[in-house]
Image (spheres, rainbow, N blue to C red):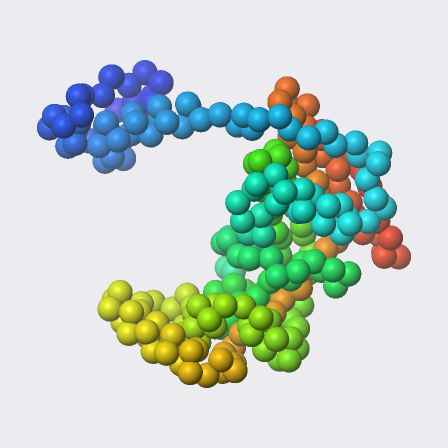
Length: 251
């Protein structure tokens, strides 16, 4: 049997009717839910705002300064949580893995983030330290992609990183066990409650597995979206002598 194309599927039943809630579509999804998804997906606009110009000829010789400039511009433009980024790693079987983490800094050592060394990403980075970061700031139609090798900081840096954050962040770190299988929500509530109490009573407490990481880039790409799809892509690549080469890419 040929699958029904979303573009030629029948009009969904009236909301509230049995057909609207129970009739299965491809893959067992209720037909109305699938149609609603397709309609919503195709109705969304991209960059429905005036986008900034980007002249790659005026870009600096190294990517760090441009990243900092774009980061501040994203925050000033009202981009929610511009410090969130996707972190991609590879597991023991060579399968890619990705999640959203927070940027803790960007300097000459690299792009910084933190996590538990015992987490899935911590174990993956210990076995294979190559990783990639992805920033997306739709308020300005911009992306930044960073690829390189990750190294760990010192225990002193990990302690300082954890204790410059909120009580909630400390409590979460004290819970630990990130990426382990959880038996129930009730178990999480008990562990989180105990961690909150400890974080309040012992603000200097430390999570021994908390680790800071720095991704030292060998490649950084800056993408500036364009309303007419004439996107500008500027890639920096590090040479063996440590200097940066710049090149434009087709969108």
